[in-house]
Length: 230
Image 1 (tube, rainbow, N blue to C red):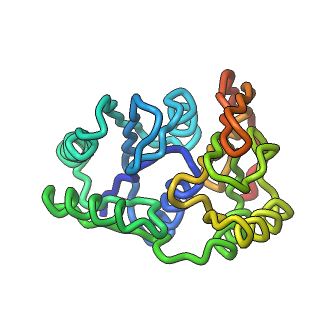
Image 2: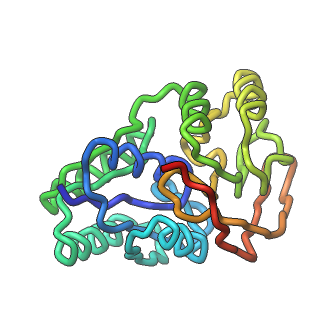
């Protein structure tokens, strides 16, 4: 069946895409919503240039919509999904929701309204084992924002490793954040995964707002070749 992934370019939506392909769905389009305000309870705020590069690397068309008022977030989702349903014949909506009922219930309501089936392959994952699974699977990602006490600001702008996972789990026990970043404690950009035909090489600049808030802004994106094992 034809599917679309609600795609932010972060680790969760990228891994959900891979799990959907494994499950036999034909992902024919990526659907990206871009909030033009600082905080959104519903969406990860993507860098559009990065998502464009990721879509090119994946070889999957990208459809997007901007939203300028959080009161219109569901309208934006409804309009985007109606577009991809009618244009691409999509029957399945894939999302990377892990533990947020706020997200899942709203995504399901819009999917039901449009006659789409909701597929959430990551739902209920244990945060620690999930991060380890991501890295073992070959999903490589950078941290682009931190907005929670306890997450080290030195992680901004660099690729997360297994040793970082150990560190995050220990700090999460102390400070109470979600080590898989569910709920917006931090945001990520995927630079490589098994389905990527090219790696993303991203350079940018950091800005530190406070002892628990910082951001990495991608300024330059290059696509690099990778060796594929056939």
